[in-house]
Each structure stands twice: as structure tokens, then as C-alpha cells.
Length: 409
Image (cartoon, rainbow, N blue to C red; front, side, top):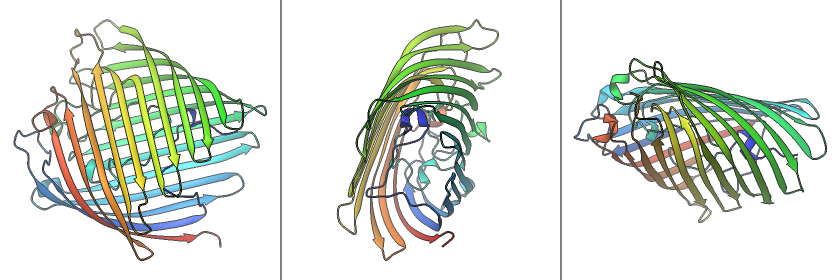
């Protein structure tokens, strides 16, 4: 049986014409030069423009045996600003994905992703899409700090058991954290961390049709000044997933959600809200595309209180010719604070919209040249670091080198 993306904590595949290949050691690097008209370092009402130089070496191990699959990726980053040298930074990116088949019917999965970054928009493939998450992450990054230090970590452990020809159950635990080393540089934003778990039932109606139900619990803590805000959510949802072709997946899930917010010494507040997630992923020989929509109550992501979050994301990549490919991605998120006004941490919420258009051209066997444009607008009146200058435009060019070598051959 397959495990639908809505309960697998995975994402829909990307990359036009890609095919999964394992047992490889991959290395490479990406060098990029970009120009930003809004280097947000202090929330100044007068945006500062600068040219940014970045370099990311990468190493990846992808190894598969009869019982396990290991995917390990590490990519440090080096970012230099031409004029505002105080923002120069060394970044870290590491990701682990490990699958182990305990028996013919039981599989354990462990995932962890860590990022230390000061220039979110200047990361490789920033805001460029190419992946649609199968389920709503919690908590999402509600506010994008384009040039301020932040550390994020997302860990997930899952076990699945196929107990019959067409029946499967599973359980998972998720832990996340968001930390701003210098809160003075991001006035209005707060640290947060969360923990939670879920259980699901997955039933195969036919070769291409899966249905099921899932229960999810989450506890999300954020830390406004001299306080601690705790949001708990209980969500029951039912999902329907159809694999129309090997490269086309459509999934819808939804159900009731109960949330409760607590902040001592104030009385707790709770309410009910519907939750909905709809996703589509399509992968063809010369084109791939994805669409995702989610509605849920969550918290964290830099903000305090409980947030009614509605988000839409789309991407598409077309291999126009043998030598050129074109990519377009966009996302929109609206975060409405549903915390009662008597909470001192109450914020109005806001919305953001962003997108990236890019083209790529291979140079020889191992090199790829790229250029593109990224736009980001954020509207959060209570957050000084972005309210004074909400728009960011960034143009970039890059060149990448990629090399792969088979393992054990």
C-alpha cells in the first residue's frame, strides 16, 4: 500500500522529468549574486538596497538497501553584503530522511531538518516552490524575515503498519522550534516551539483510490515579552486521495478542529473551527506543477496567540527546450488572530504574498546557469521590522555545479 501525502508528512514530487535514483554520492556548489531593494536589518522606514554574494557547497548521500533508505544532505552557506557588512553571515542547512523496514509490514521513518539563516530569500531555490506539502505544517513561518538571523528545526518520527491487504494504520510525533538569536533585530516577533502527535487509518478502495481518517494533537508555545502563550489544537479529519496516473495525485482532507489558548494569569479561551487541506501534484516528462490550499488554526511562526491561517501555494516548471527550463511559483497566506482581545499578546495578524520567476540553462554536463526575480509583500501592522517597509524585490543570477558518483559500484 501507498501512504498518501496527507498522512505521510511528505511532499509531492517536483522536478520535471525526474526519476528517483538512489545509491549515489552527490556533491556540488551554488554561487549567486543578487540585488535587493530592501535589506531589512532594523525595520527602518527608509529601505536600504544592497548587492549580496552567496556561496553554498553541498554534499548528499542517498543510499538504499533491501530494508532501509538513507538520505543525508548538508549545505553550509556564506553570505556577504557589499555595503552593509554587519549583516555578513555563515549559514547552516542540514536534512536527514531515514526509512527502515522493521518487518514486511512495518516501516519506521525519521526526518529532521535544521536551518540557520540570515537571508531566507537568498537561499538556493528560495520561494521557488517545486514542492507542495501533503499536510499543513505546524507551526508555519508566518512572517519572513529577509535579512535577520533565525534558527529553525523540524523533526518527525512515524511508524506505519499494514495489517491487511487493504488496511494500514500509523502514528507519528512532530517537534519544531523557531529561535531568533537577536530579538532586538526583529521587533514584534517571538520565539516558539511545538510538539504534537497524530494517528491515522488508511484504507485502499482500489489501486488508485485511498480514503481514511486521522487525529492530530499539537501544543505550540510562543514567548511574547514577559509572558508565555500556549495554544493546543485537537483535529479530526477525513481524507480522500486519488492517483489518477503515476505522476498525478489529488488529495483532499478536512474535519472539525478545537483550539484552546492559555496565557497566565488570564482565563483560558477555546473554540471550534473547520479545517481543510487540498493538494495536487503533477509530474510529466517536460513539465511539473503543484497546488496546495490549507485552512487551519495554528500558532507560532514568529507571532503570538492563536492564528486562523489560510494559505495557497502554486508552482510550475516547464522544460521549454533541451537547454532551457522556466519556473514560476507563488504563495499567499492570511493569518487572522483569533485570540480574545483581553490577551495582552493579541496581534491583528496580517497577510503576505510572494513569488519567484526563474529560468535555467545547463552549461555542459555539470554546470547550470540561472537567473530570476523574487517579490515579497508582507502586511503586519503591529510588526515594526516589516511594517515600515513591507515590499522586497530581489533579482539574482547563479551558477551551480553538480557531480554524482554511484555508491558501492
